[in-house]
Amino acid sequence: MPANAAPQHTIGAHVDSTDPLSAAARVGAGAIQFFLADPQGWKAPRPHEHADAIKASDLTVYVHAPYVLNVATTNNRIRIPSRKLLNQHAAAAAAIGAKGLIVHGGHVTAEDDPAIGVDNWRKVFSRAAESGGFPLPILIENTAGGTKAMARRLDRIAQLWDAIGEYEPGFCLDTCHAHAGGEDLTGIVDRIKAITGRIDLVHANDSRDAFDSGADRHANFGTGLIEPDAIAAVVRAAASDVVVETPGDGQAEDISYLRANTG
Image (tube, rainbow, N blue to C red; front, side):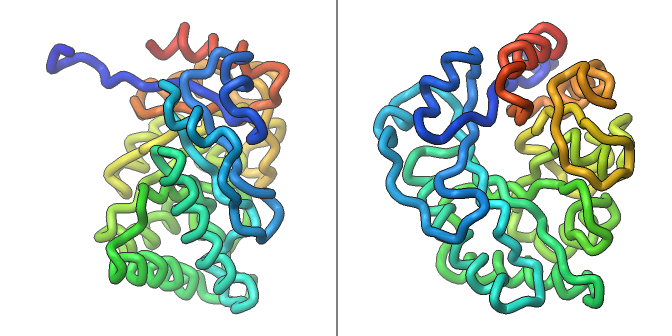
């Protein structure tokens, strides 16, 4: 590749975890993202039925951690199991050859100082480092809602990276979450990279709801409130892998749009 050529990115989709390879083929995905356990549950992931085929495929693989996981919270009944679940999913994702594990930034309660949540994240990486680190990159994802969220606003993300940046965590930028969270997509890649130094993955999603609504509801391109060319501009600027987390019936069209407009 010439020195001045744009980095290549792989475009794929979040797919059903039962048979990710077949799901990828149906929508023409070059990358897949899926859950290894119930996203709303606390059970540890079990070995995937198609693990060998997934590892042998030429697809780029990402795993999304369960939504319930919140390592930032001051609630011990959630934070401690969340740490355990994070470690379990990191090990399981690495075992199938995943390129990264995506984890939501989490939040603290309305009564808490966000600095406590930031420090709880620092402890996660510090403890992992003491035992040799995580077996694959942990990609922290920006989120759409919550005034005490760790990764909704860029100023809070900057606080978080001041605490954990030395451990070189990865970052996943979700366009729907940024829009709904009140961050303008124009120039957002440069603003995030100024904080984190990197964007490892883009979740390219339209938003059903208004700017700064705090609502996490994804839409297929052109059916929500983000202009498709604004999503494509983020993908081009990030030059990272891309996963659409849009409704399944329109995923093939969303992938085709990105391939035609971000190459």
